[in-house]
Length: 293
Length: 269
Image (cartoon, rainbow over all chains, first blue to last red; front, top):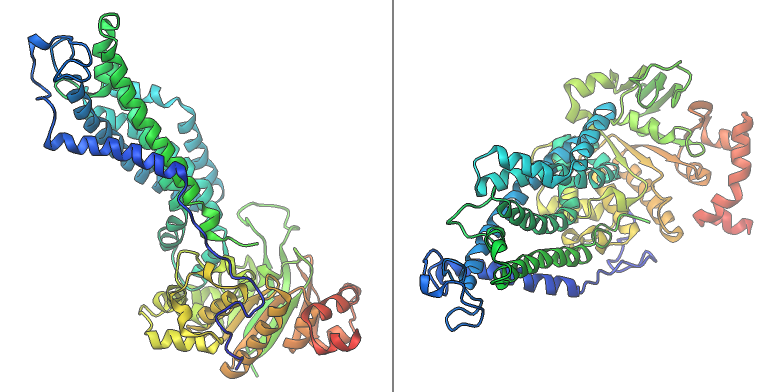
């Protein structure tokens, strides 16, 4: 027998050290996203005012009015309350849509990556076509064809995101499938399905996590756009997009009605995007896979 | 003595569904025989079809034409009816251990995989530890991930993984060429010891003729997908009959002997 090799790098090779520090973007993104999520959760327990309560006496009061820090809309509803409750809609729609699209899109992407020859080309082109069609256009067509509401928004955004999720999956999945540990798995009798779920999926998960955070951001923007156009959230559901829509005719009288929901959308979108950047740096696949020389 | 693995008139090409003229075979008319406990070296330049050949022999690829049998039965027959038994008896070790072990699986999980897959059971901790001891690693390695181990240690793990289902033939595809020079000899010695102790047949693909000279009794030389010379290693490398083999031997001798860091190489210097 050979002499037992000591655990240290006695082979004369350096054992790669794994160093990790938390990227600044991850912290900033995490704080912004945490703020939005925290506010949405808070709305279930407490809001400054009853979000649905109409009050003639507080009609269009300016920001800074006692009891109405961000002012009130034309029906006298508190803007701060509307924004707090609106966070729920934004997060609900974008998170549900992203998760559904990610599951379906990843499955399509894995199936495409694992398909052979001509079939793979056809599936891959089909995904490319899906990505090439402007997403907001698809979403508009779908949302108008359905009963307006959050469900319509979710379905529209899901269909918009599926090709994107599939596209993001295909390349990295093909790379993993070409590695020797996949061939080794076939050599000890594992099936293609097992390989996809047990080897490919865990190894592309950093990419999917980053993609998810970017999709959350796009989803929030898309939900706001659909609600702004009147095919998303319907009254009395509070939504940042709908707040913008209602503020539009009064932009001269009460610009705050437009500024504050806009700022809320900006914070949420920025937060998820920065979080995505931070995750990308933190989960850098090169650092995780050490895929060779 | 009957051969454990027999190959006769084997042809293979990638993407064989395409109907070409039939001239572009990756491997053409390959014949060889490997006895139980035998050793075979497959040498040739890059692209000569060496790696493809052992992938056919261990069931990862299907031949397009010709005969390929294991233990007296056609391999296609094995794969159709006794797939798991065939795979357990024919295992492979790859070139780059950083690519042949999943970075997301601990050593324990990676080692357990063949047994879980081919025997449908979870090996005991004692079995896993014994498996590691056989390749000269301690049980502490079990909880580690591939990035926490060196290349030589990883190749030992990969060898232990292949041996965990008690194969009759171990195929090795350039098992040392991705390793540091100082580690190559250790891994080769390990393979020789294991072959001896476990009674394995060993099929080794390499472009390193010194490795073949040291480890294998027989050798076949591939050139552009065809066998240009075959026979006992000392004869083929000592007095090559084919001009391609002669060129290969002449070009490789000094460099590869020196790279392997052996005594002969020391003397030559």
